[in-house]
Length: 201
Image 1 (cartoon, rainbow, N blue to C red):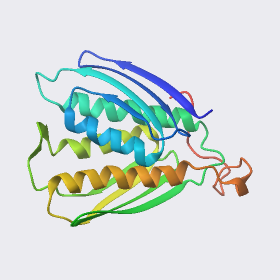
Image 2 (cartoon, helix red, strand yellow):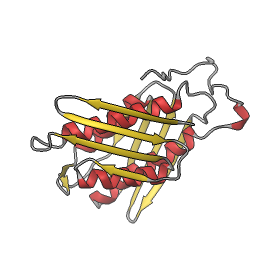
Image 3 (cartoon, helix red, strand yellow):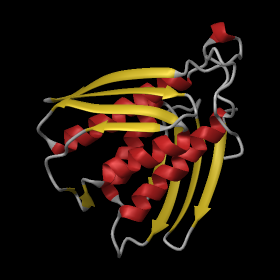
């Protein structure tokens, strides 16, 4: 069972996450940020993971801490569920259209985190959420999940479409990357014989 539960409490946020990498796409999300809830529900659906998130944070200050810390905890849960990264396809890629928008996401579930973010969101806010926070979420997620993640919006006009296509593209790429590769027979997809996944995260 590739499942994980992570809880994290700081002076700024308190977050709990449960996920199942082999789920049916059920998202049960409550972060206190409506637009982020919508994105994470879409993320769970298209990654085909079951994801439960409960977050409370200092939203009276702004949404930064809750957004970033949610990315941290979901990322840690993915890493724990993957364990040593053995037997997975490892690489994933997706091109996702949404009306006038097209976004590409490519990732390597290697345990070596990196984010390339080539996305410009025209509107400064979506709902009550500052647009600059979306990069912060993906940075925190990639760093803690151990993903080398490249996200590029190739074109688009509508800010909602741009951001949602990013979440959907990353979800689809993740779904492909963490899928078991039967031909590996449980081995690691690396000539080194080991990836950097750490179940103690």
